[in-house]
Image (cartoon, rainbow, N blue to C red):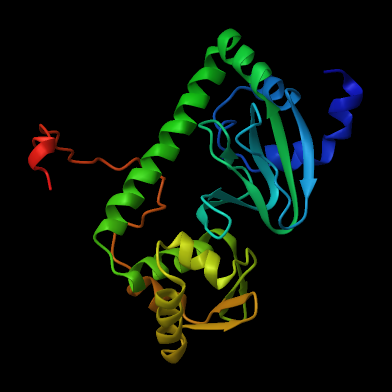
Length: 256
């Protein structure tokens, strides 16, 4: 792409480069990073606008705001898969994304251009593989943690994640600036809306959180952290070492 297009993205590019640890760009040399950024175009949206769908041959890097990864299963069921913070990537492995909060700005990377870069620039290919590997590691760690957790613990997991990734400190509390509806929080915690509501009520009664319509404040983050077992399912600083056992499946005829 020529200079005019690059100049049109100057503010967003500078913002993204300032993150330093942005997924996909992390560790790339300046020339490789510039080549990846030049393969993209800026897309902006408000809450509810789809930024990336399964029909798009593209990847997406969030520049500002928060994006919701979700899968619509039916007219009445929408499963929240996760939230993307600035610098994080969707679409490299076919995940859907739509904006959640505020004026979301993202860089949409063309699939053909990105694959061409991966072929011609080994560092970009390695960064792509590393990013997908981290996403899969996070998913597996979360699956294992959630399998052994109660509904209340899963809700706490998600509240701590919101506080640590999207929270804004305010007078000894933490205000969450990536709002989810109670139904979306329940879906993200793999809980029914009623069970999530009970978990939130227990936390309100303990004066650990305060809730209002689309507003969530963590009053005591340390007390909230104390209620979550470890490891945290979203921790990605170091890939989890998983003791995995593979064995032959039962005879399908007698499995049930």
